[in-house]
Amino acid sequence: MNKSSVPDRVIRRLPRYLKKLDDLICKGDERISSNELGRQLGLTPSQIRRDFNHFGEFGWQGYGYNVKFLRRHLAHILGLDKRFSIILVGTGKIGQSLLENFDFNQYGFRFLGAFEICEELVGTTIAGYTIMDAKLQDQFIRDNHVDIAILSIKSSSAQRVADELIASGVKSIWNFTEAEIDPGDSGVTVENIHFSDSLLVLSYFLSEKEN
Amino acid sequence: MNKSSVPDRVIRRLPRYLKKLDDLICKGDERISSNELGRQLGLTPSQIRRDFNHFGEFGWQGYGYNVKFLRRHLAHILGLDKRFSIILVGTGKIGQSLLENFDFNQYGFRFLGAFEICEELVGTTIAGYTIMDAKLQDQFIRDNHVDIAILSIKSSSAQRVADELIASGVKSIWNFTEAEIDPGDSGVTVENIHFSDSLLVLSYFLSEKEN
DNA sequence: TAGATTGTTAATCGATTAACAATC
DNA sequence: TAGATTGTTAATCGATTAACAATC
Image 1: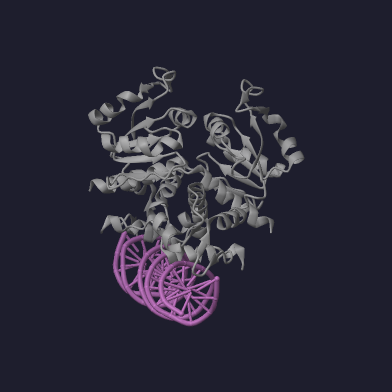
Image 2 (image 1 turned 60 degrees about the horizontal axis):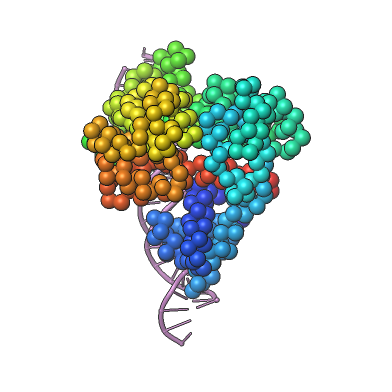
């Protein structure tokens, strides 16, 4: 099995599977068939079995899938047992929202700290984390083996700060700016949350419906 | 041309085209070929010509595409000239961030107002908008023909509030909660921003790289 | 005109679905 | 055992790419 050959489409369905399995575990269900899982997620049973079989064999004939067993394996495939370290770069409203509402620990990440360039925010505490001065960022990344940097700063500085983060040694960037980040030949992974793209797609469907 | 037959993949590339065209206009470029556009976006020229031809013929042989002309048509296809109305439901940090940073007007939307259940926030002003009491929401939607509701509240109330919004008459929901919203048979469009899905995909690629 | 580049058709590629032998 | 359901192969479907006549 060549992991890197798994289609992007399949990978982007994995979080949905994980979430659904958490629901099922919460409800106390022990097992589920691809048929029932497909019904609940709006996918065909074939597709689900095929998706899972990109990574191994997680079911049993005549039984289906054990939800806890499958959940554990999906979490492993997603790297959630690796306890990736993560920092926040930029503590504007989006950054603050993530600090307050996103449970990094529950998802298996180690949140290390938040950095900010605005001196009024440096030293203040949000969700139990004392905001650090962006000047210390480079050294912090070098000292702490940071896997993921959340980039939530103004778009106009995005590429410059991304370049700095990459030079400091982060492995990946979770990009909340509108900018398209070019990681050059660093091999750094960039995953985008582009608000406007999403709203424009919504607008398209809305517009289409009117006709 | 049956609009509803345009593949989702194509539609989700439209905002990227629009953004690139804005860049080109900004730089003062007048025309661009599918070849050059493909090089800049990492797509094949064939795909780009095919994407555009789902909606009409926007180029000229031997010339290519006029960027302003094409930009205008893409904006129209995305419904950005319809001036869809939009309200914010929930003024926590994410909502505040959108109010302060997202230029709804520039994208062609009419931002009408923000609603909040928390009494301490009602009446305060953010980015020039006075937060309204959630109790007035239903009547406001009925009175003002609201096209889009931004749902940025806690996930546990998401479906309930979504049901209310749908009953009041919103046409679509831009969902920032982790919940999967079920629009029932209302025909309401739901577009999701699922932060965790995105981070988990990032984690997958990071995990894969380590092996 | 000659060169460039479109819109579109045909060929290819990849993903989804259907079918089924294997087996719990 | 009989019924259920997997993993996987074959068939189908749809999207991407290549090729090219049309034409600016």
